Length: 412
Ligand SMILES: Nc1nc2c(c(=O)[nH]1)N[C@H]1C(S)=C(S)[C@@H](COP(=O)(O)O)O[C@H]1N2
Ligand SMILES: [Mo]
Image (cartoon, rainbow, N blue to C red):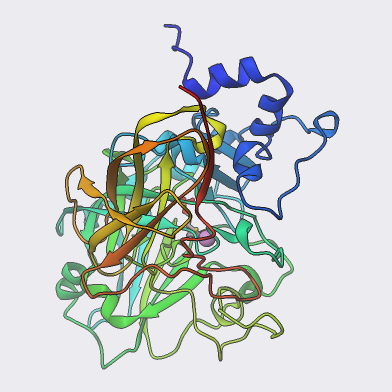
């Protein structure tokens, strides 16, 4: 069956070379970034990168392929539903994923559990007999919004789309711990280890994806095997993935092969020096805060995202808002770059404090340029920050100013 052209695809066809720019991730979204962004010459526009084989099932119109291991959702793709469709969800791999064959017999996947009274290795098949729960969480890379840091940190220049709201089904970690007799002693951390094959000849600690988070996250953490009502794909960590709700993406270990309750944080580089919020002139190290809990953040998704045309008149200003580790309380919207604000309605079902909320507000938009911004407040009174917290690697950008959307409204 022929797929109807999405607005985006149609616009690209019409736009010609501008479409090629957009497809290469340098189009309207890049231009909307702010005054520092300069458009690339159309003649120099590289072709859109193809989706890598393990993610070939993603919707090419909804994503920006930065590299084989970094794929971002377009701002305009965050659409009507509260859950981000799997085919539109971003992908981030620090290492190439394991071989597709790990999905041949999912229930045979084994995970070692340590730091409990009865440490042992369990198969996914056994985990499935111990309990089940479904939960919605925001999955967001700590580098989401890095593209708005003026010092151009190394790493993928994500805009808004290294994030999504996802439904997970799996076993609550607290049920697993109970089943294994409880914690051994008083461990400070929960440490998860990824099951990728590590390159030969390197110290494993320099490459392994192993992250430690505070022990008490076990209360809400889950070992998941199903995402958005489908068996977990290889791209997103199948057969088995740790979800630490409210915590930055990197702590949500894919292909998890070991879950340990430990006295110390992992010695891996990804724990000790990467994902640390160090000042601009500093060398990141364990003395700086780790990219753990997410902070309140929201962004506008319509109208005018990715260069979509906007006509003067009544428009529904829409977006998504997350609280991090606390629920969203309210969202305010501005169409004048933050001079004046109006409270938006929270719409869609409330899927719990770790999910994001959609918001909408009908506004009269006159012709001309407008800077659309949104600002979320959580139930503890924490308000989304106006300015980014500068840090050398460009992590955790929650600035409402950086994420504001510049739209040019034409005469109706
Ligand atoms: N085993 C493993 N887990 C991992 C990673 C990885 O490279 N290997 N990347 C992390 C990072 S940095 C992020 S942002 C998320 C991305 O999840 P996604 O690809 O399902 O969107 O997974 C995290 N878990
Ligand atoms: Mo990430």
